[in-house]
Image (cartoon, rainbow, N blue to C red):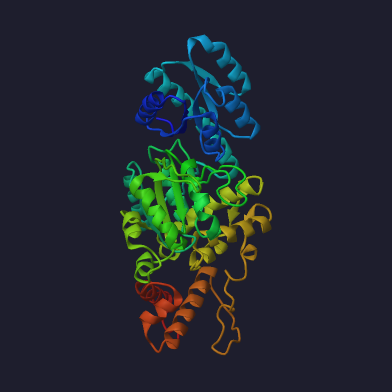
Length: 464
């Protein structure tokens, strides 16, 4: 079924209003009623009514006058006129005034439901076109194949949860690719052909969050000169990705919990809730359990969101993925910046990228490669194209006093020696506490021991 509509039934006969209300509600649409043309125009002025079933002959204003006044006021409501056989000519006149169709009384439920379904499809397509102009909606991206066990495990989890309608919580450091994982889940789901709406909860001013999320009627607040659908209704039948969910203020957390439980939203200024069928994927780089303990995040919302929890590992813990990521990002960067042909990277430059700890994760790697793509000559990235903070800041082989000594060996060997000296310095600064040194360097304790062992094994006999 297409998206549910907000329908207004306009008729001066109570029995007809009651019968039509029941028929339209059974079809899954939200319904309101008006007993006169004037009452209808007052309700239509809020701008959120999508379809009006409007009688032609009413005592105060005719249906034609309602249509004309609505169009003059710029109200974007689809009108279907209701008429008796004797006033078909009048119904055609109403269509000339701006109505799209008419139906003969008494209305048959099957025909009415079909007309509403057709209107829902047309309005849905128009809404998606508007959203496409503002957002990247449902854009499919190539997926960089995982090499590391941790990312292969993540891909398996994503593939398992995707076909369900389960809410998903993605956690991990900034820049790890939580948005890419969210989009992959959407693309593997039964909602893949509908909208994927990404929302950065930390980027929207707090006073506009509710309106952006749930929409508003015309005149709901100062500056609301037209009705707005809201991101949840834009994502109806699709997926909404709430990035930085930990930034949501407590007041809006309550309303988001209501959406999850009742599957409905109420636009600002409206007294009518709208049913919405949307999957929620949330992401954060914060520890939500700590936020709950500190009273900054609702515990009930946390439990609702974390029904299926996926942790996206940092890049430094899956270095084996870096070479494949480099090639994937270079291919994408070459296309984006109009670089002809494929970009290559020198082995020495790649070694430095693999050895870097990437505190900014994949996002930082992408930024570094974009810069290198612009600087590269002859379609090849060299060490000189990398930024200074990526290449070693201290001369390789420097003495304890800082004076450089002659170095020997390949770049791989020199990078290994430099890394070894940094580890020894960190252990010394931590008074021999290797666990603390590993934390200071941003690596696991097992990684620190492995690097020390590899360095010792690589030394030649007799080397001091």
